[in-house]
Image (cartoon, rainbow, N blue to C red; front, side, top):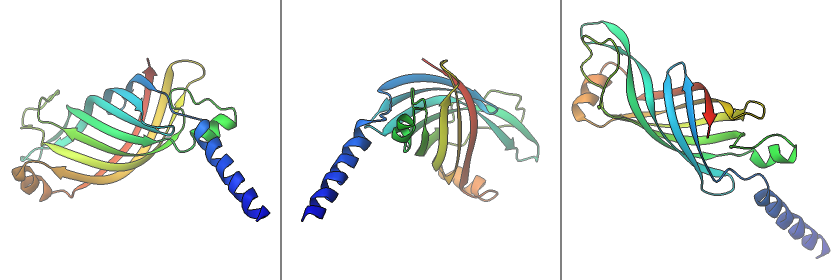
Length: 190
């Protein structure tokens, strides 16, 4: 009986310690840029270790026309990404910086590419196919020193779904529905 009480007390203290320390920030805005675009985002706390990141930006797309020509254009993107900062408490316990959610995370990114506009030299580029990418991914976010500058690295593989039936018939015949997200970004937090 004594062993059971000690185990129960240790378990409860462990839960309290895990939830009381290392919580994500309540809310902040961020602007990031990388080799493939630029984005503005807002991150809001859902619980001690979970946050919801919403983002709007412009992504670089490589395309191929029906005539076999290829090129690069910028297209708009909108995303919602629930994140689990799984090691934020451990980082805080070790005395490492955790401000503005400087920690490792797992997430599921839901990204929408609307056919609103295209920026770039595109003489034979017709339109952006309306699509949604659903990508589970792993990443890290760190601040640079005590500044508001940060960097973020992430990688994931998921599924791409075309919203127009014509797009899925035309595009899926030449490519598969695998979506890959590899990003390296630098940004500034407000």
